[in-house]
Structures are given as structure tokens and as C-alpha cells.
Image 1: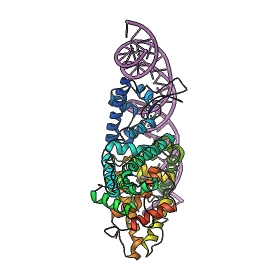
Image 2: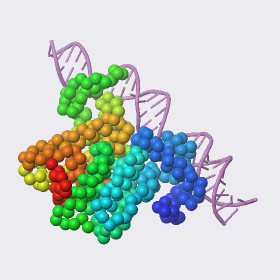
Image 3: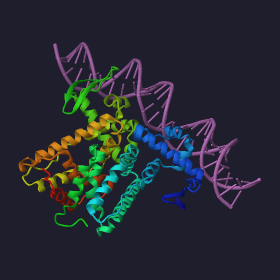
Image 4: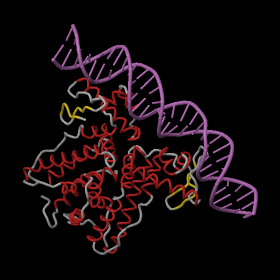
Length: 205
Length: 205
DNA sequence: CCCGAATAACACAGTTTGTATGATTCATGT
DNA sequence: ACATGAATCATACAAACTGTGTTATTCGGG
């Protein structure tokens, strides 16, 4: 496939079989695409990953199945777009105090994962990442974006973190949300930040 | 459904429609059950969660589809059994030094998650936990078991940890494996342990 | 206003899914 | 050893989902 036109992260691809992804610049395309993604989030939240069927989704979105296949010839692409879309927004303010920035960052992470549809989308992509390279790359992209955004907020403090250090900070919150399935309290966030900042042999920056 | 016979965590249930889960005590049942679970792990590792079909699984396991429905009337039950089975084993030795115990514990966690089939099973159950109570409970059970096992190893040190503290320790490793999809190095484990033990205001015990 | 695209409206074969039914194999208790 | 009940097999069936077409209609940009 060949890249053609671009619009933020949404690229229009041309496939060998004369099929092509709709032009993201077209408002009609944007409209149906948004309607589909919204319906997908609903279905995902209501019925889980197994219930996200092209048939059901088409009905829910008021769209034909062929439209779905045109937009996402591979089903995994839909999930990928679900997590790449709406990932931005809601970031806290930069600050000089790493403790404050880290705490607010984790709080925004918690807020973003309050949405069941988003949780389901992230897990679905993660689950298929082992067998689908596109999903694996999307996850890597998401991580890189968030790491960069976090480091942006840390600029006033003069500290920058590596990917490993970022995971040491965010890991507990992610595990609490996805695996423990328990409330991420302010105390939990405070504890995570304190542990993270309590640098033993080396500074986390 | 009514509980009837028990064998470790495997309980035989009787359903309203005259259907019942096979008796776990029967060696024939155990045999086919093991063969099915082994085949399920293969399929899960090879084709991902979407490829784990009752039809494919039946063929792979050399079993009829009806046998699958008899063992697991609900598909989610299969995934649940996949993570509950084989979760034990490979635990490190107890010790008086929390740092050593924690590091060895994380190493054993990493070792357990080296198996792609196990990773896929955990993610699949996690993904459906939001819509399937059984899966949610299985996850909670798994967490409780591991927390108890970890506290067992910590007994010689006189330290016991809460669920939150356990997640603060294991979260980074889980996130590294599932979301970062990157190698969990010995250095990463060492850093996680050091951060965890560097108690800021309160001791983690 | 016209042309090309995006979409709708169908159609079709193949697969998966639940759910039956009867025959056959196996484990267990007497 | 043998009879009984279970577990499994071998089928069958309708329903839903899946890819993939074809044609007609609607919409947006030049």
C-alpha cells in the first residue's frame, strides 16, 4: 500500500486491489467515520470486545457493512483508530515541581481510563498486539506520544525521564486500573509518586 | 446452577437445562480437558484471541464441538480456566531480606509471562472482565492468590504488604510486559524494587 | 453544474455458532 | 465380569457473521 493524503495521524492508504481508504479531508467521510467510531465505543463498552461485530456495528452506526470494510479493511485497524483517536486532551499544566507534575499526570491518566470504552479499546489492541504488527506499532506510538508529552510537562523542572522510568511511574496506575480493577485513589497516586521520586541509588532524571 | 463435586479450583456445576459440566474426577474428562486447554494455548498464541474459535479449537484438540460446549457452556469460562490453571509453580524461596524476595518475585512474574499463551489468556480475561462478572472474579482471585503467596515469602522478614502496595511493586513489570511490550531486564527489576523499598513517609510494610 | 467519490442496497458462498439427536466408548461400582 | 451411567462422537440444522462482489444513489469539490 502507498501513503497518499494525510490528516493528523489519519493517513489515506491505497491497496493493491483497487480498494482505497476514504479521503479523510472529505467532510462526509469524517462524518460517517465519527459516527462509526462513536458507535464502536458504545458497542465495545456494552458488549465487550467479542460483541464488536461489523454487522452489529453497521446497524448501530446506521451504515452499511461495506462502508466499514472500506474504512478499515482489517478489523484491527478499527481498534487501533479507537485508541489513537481521543488520546490527546486533558493534559495537566507544566510545572517546576516534579512531584506535582507527576501526580497531576497520573490523575489525568486515571481520568482518561475512566471511560469503559477507552479501557476496552486499549485492552483489545494490547491483546492483539502479539499477533498483529499494526497493533503493536500503535501501542508503541501511544507510549511514545505520552512519554513525550510527560517530558514536555517536566521541562520547567529541568528533568527528563526515559521510557523505563516512565513505566516505573505509570505502571502501578495502569495495573491498578486494568488488572486490579480497583479504584485509583488520590492516596494511591500520592504513594506512587513518592515511591517514584524516592531515588535510591540514581535520580529518576 | 448448583455446586456439586470439587477438585482444587475446578468445580462441577449443574445447570437448569439438564446440562452439566463433566465430572473433574473422571480421568477421561481430565484427559480431554487437558488436551483442549493445551490446544487452546496453542491457538491463542498463534492466532490471537480472535482466532480462538470453538470450531478451530475442536479440530486442533481432536474433539467435537459439543465436548467444548459441555465443558464450557460460556466461552469466557475457557479463558478463565486458562489463567487459573498453571498459575501456580515456580515461586521463589522465602527470605528475610525484602529486597531479595521482591526481586526474585518479580523475576518469577517475568518468567511466567514469557509464555505468549499465558499473556494472551490474561489479556483476554482482563478485556472481558468489564462485561463478564466471572472473568472479573477470576482476575480478583488470581490477584488475591498471588498477594497471599508473596506475603508467604515475606514471612521470614516480618513484613506483610497490602494489595495496593503489591500493585505498586508489580505494576511496573506488568505494564512493561503488556503495554510497553519491552524486555523486562534485571536492571528494570532492580530499579522497581529499589523504588518500592525507598519508603518516603511510610514504610511499605 | 458536472464528475468522481462515498455510500446505500442488494446478493452470494463460506464459516462460526448454538442446539439438537442418536450411537459409541469409557469409568465405576457391584 | 459386567451392567449402568457418563462422556464422547458423529451428524444435522437454522441463524448469524464474514468477505466480497455488483449496481444505483447521494454527496462534495472543481
